[in-house]
Length: 389
Ligand SMILES: *Cc1c(COP(=O)(O)O)cnc(C)c1O
Image (tube, rainbow, N blue to C red; front, side, top):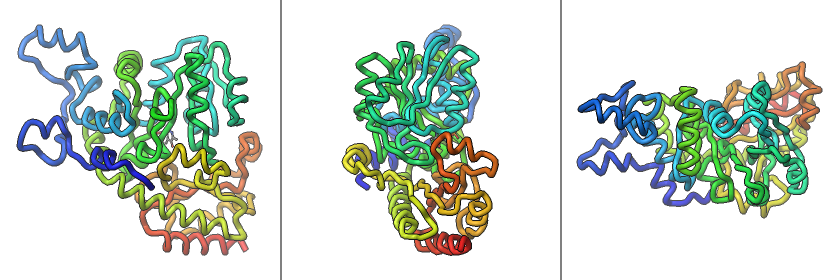
């Protein structure tokens, strides 16, 4: 993993605005307030006239939240960031803030389930969408419609971790004046910088690696100041999906160890991937490092995180469940990116056809590699695979 030293500095540093004031706390203060009061009425009137720039009410701006926003904008090399109470709140705000009835969204690659469910819901409001699983640029050009107003990219994609050629896709979209948004939760800005690859907007579920300790839910959108202002007034301030000051503080604390955590997640996940590749009970391992076009991957990623998946040779629900229940170290649960290793499968025993339609094999198992150490985790996996006989 090649982490830009300036990114490490951003993660580890305290808050520059607070430190500029002289003797400063090393940890950013939690400004636990719902509102801010003014010395006179005219000052309040002025604040209300520019709520994206002033402290009026915590549903708009809050200093602790702004400290995280400055860091995330800097890490993604974007002009501005807005944080939200969850990744889904951030994703909703991009769609609701930028789209109107009659518009079309094109999703490219396997996309986080709830993001697609939100798009389904938006069809009630006249917003259409398509999901494109053919990742070829020509297929992409064919799938764009005259009313496409947003291109949504996940790279690597959900579950199969297929990698998109972000510069190629975003340049086609840009020629046609269509904004592109990349969900960068998997890679984090330390391993991939979509804005530098040509994307217009980046979203994050900060719940995963950025916070990193499975103790909060948060989201973020990074883009130009102009677009963030649009999202602020149209979607953020009115939808009310705020990040609470205390959760912002936890997220700041998580960011301070992000570079060192990610290096360990990467190394241990690659060791686990290699072990699984050599096991007879495993048909295939899915991890961006195993992509055939290694030049594409090297151009876009400066490192990898610790979420991967693999296909069991025995894909019936009973075998999948026996394997998962046979693990002792991996805990069974949704989400990922924390210090604890987690296991889950998209196979629910009743959705075989649905999985087939999405090209997901029924023996699919997803692992989030935590920080317990790869030897312990590989032993655990070996034991559970043995149970499949
Ligand atoms: C978890 C996740 C989200 C949603 O984030 P929440 O914080 O759970 O709302 C969005 N995209 C991806 C890729 C995710 O894994």
